[in-house]
Image (cartoon, rainbow, N blue to C red; front, side, top):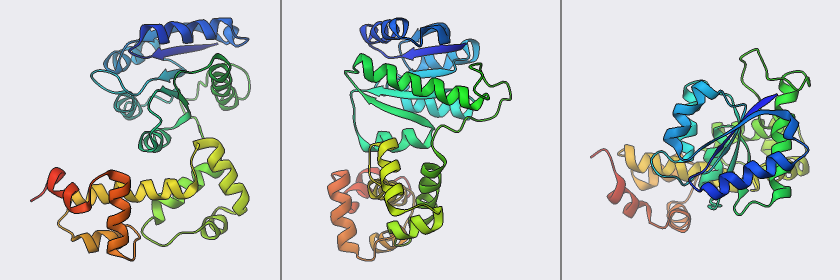
Length: 253
C-alpha cells in the first residue's frame, strides 16, 4: 500500500482531492493520506511521511510547488508527482517534466480526471516494483515517463544548438515521425517543437543574464541563424526583447 500526500494552499481543494481518493476504486491502495498547505511544509513533511505519490500545486506562498519539488529531488525523493494547478503555462510544464512529473492537471480538476491520473501514478509504482502493488524497496529512481519521451527530451536538450526536425529525432530515437509527435503530445500536452522552443528560450535567458555574448552570438548559440528572427520570437514568447530582458535581469556586468 502507498502513502499519498496532497499539497495545496487551498484547504477546500485538499479536502476535495481527499474525498475523490476515498470514494474511488483506488482507495484500498493507500495506507495513509496526508496534507500540506505550502512548499515549506512539503519539504519538512516528506522525510517523515515518505510519500509514494504527491499531488502538488504550483502557486503557493513561500516555496512554490516546483521549487519545493526541486529541493525534494536534490534530497533524493523519487515520489511519483502529479501537478494540479490553475496555471496552465508551458514553462511550468517544461520544468515539471524535467523534475519527473507524470501528469499536469488544470484546476478545477474534475473527479474522473483526477482518479484517472491517480490510477496512472499507482500503475507507475506497481510497474517499478514488479507489479506487486507494494512500494519499491530498491531505492532506485522510478522512470516516470515513457522511454520514447525521455529519449526525445534528452535529444532536444543535447542538440538545441543545431537545426532539428522530426526526421532527425525519429532517426536518433528509432521511432516514426508519427509516433514521436503522437506520444510526446499525449504525455506532455505540447508539441515536440513547442518543447524545443521553450528549451531554447530558457537557454537564451540564461545567456542574457549570465554572459557577455552579443545578441547575435546568443541567437547562434541556441540554434537561430537569424538574429532578427530570434529577437522577434524571444519578444513574442517572453514579452521583452532580448535587449530589454538583459537590461532588466542581467547578473554579470
